[in-house]
Image (cartoon, rainbow, N blue to C red; front, side):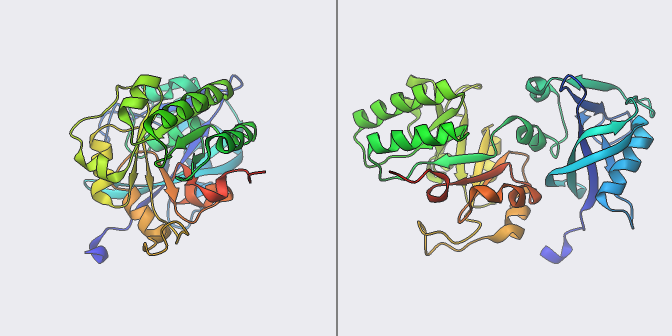
Length: 318
């Protein structure tokens, strides 16, 4: 029953960078839950404390430093077998002192690109994706004219888009393959990632990512592409999210958070339900449905990687 759910434990944590841009991780000591795992340093918010106050106190106790400036990054709700937490993460680029393990915990300064290699508690894993993957996921409209869409793609890439889904069900197989090859060339030149919707064979042939509709996701028994080739899925409920995590997918899209023009009859889940579904898995998740690019901060307050969308995310056609 919803009323029986325990109140989450509020935890404040920091993304600390050194002068070389490396990020500090602390290893959980013996005798604690998840001992040996690496995490972003921090600790429990005590009664009467704000998360920002708790962050300064915990980092002083654990590392011997004082926080000078901290900016909210993401708040990850996460359910464990024996408790629920909200990991409230701040970016801390300015602090006084030199971090050292005052509680005899091991410390490691990791380059950004190597963070994925550290075993972490479930709540910390989505934070790595927030730091290393794009905050916005652009989805093409299903009905598109290839030449006009490629012009829009060029503008979007020039404006900073770095993760794009090609979904064009009205095209023939050959036309879709031709469009995907053109889009791949453009995305590669911009340092962006391209995923194609529902076409595993095409994704494998072109070496691009694959985005699975929920129906395809639930029919699978194994990951359809090898590790290193991105696979994502559209999810709408807890069962679909659990399947995406069990298959080892790289991220999911969850919604609709708000009512959308493309699905006018679909009920919107709202941010509270989004958070409840988010806490059951440790996947990176984009929020979808009635959102705009400017909603990234709101989405991250509810544990999202960022936001995904169609109409509001593309430059207007000329």
